[in-house]
Amino acid sequence: MRNRWRAAAAAAAVALSLVARPAAAGQPARAAAPQAAAAEGCDVLAPGASAAAEKAVRTACSQIGVWYSWGGGHGPAPGPTYGTVDPTDPASAHDPQRRGFDCSGLVRYAYAEATGRDILNGTAHSQYTSPYATARFGASDGTGPLVPGDLLVWGSARKVHHVALYLGAGKMVEARQSGTRVTVSDVRTGGDFFGAVRVGGSPGQGTFSTWGTDVWTHVEPSTTSARVHRFAGPTSVRVECQKHAQSVTAEGITNDAWSYLPDHRAWITNIYIKGPAWLDGVPTCR
Image (cartoon, rainbow, N blue to C red; front, side, top):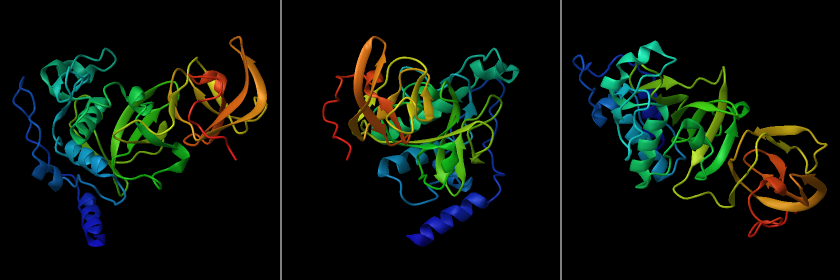
């Protein structure tokens, strides 16, 4: 098994010189065959992923060479579609004639094929905040704790604007921007890299939704402790446990219950979690 991962990682280091043959002018690009994807070094390059995550990776890799198309992949069913013009990007002028994916369209298709259900239908931001998230990682975590199939994201708490699938060995598969094709890239952890999220085939245990806008989490269950993370709007979160601590009054509600969010390593007042004042089925923190 160890030799398998070494061989796959070595394949990723090969220069990505092979590209799908361009389509004739005005014709949609065809998806690359899985064999071509393997030749590009696109595969599961590390151990630790679930079977569904590995299948999602290989599904995305089977699309190597397909055009990026803004809005592509967001039809009634998962799969490549013709895109639209992005008014902010002149390179997207031909996207209405290019059948392919944008970044989230590719991720949607990969996980739909992997799980048999359309669990990630939406934008990069909605995929990051998906209730199917089972773990989250911040930018400071880097790629160390990641496994193949994790979603890498760029942007901010207010808006995630790009998503890609992690392969392992510092590599990812992505539909990056107009004028390019689905490809393997080195993970870009600089700039506005925001972190990663791990996706499961069913909603994460203890998953709830926040409500309100610009809601802050804290280091301790107290509003006077340091702030950690801001939820710009309703967000799916995983709650590990809850406890009685500082009483808070907000939005006309008073509550002393706080929940611990392990994926954010922070506390949030239960006022901003949809549900009763004391969440059903969530244990008391010890």
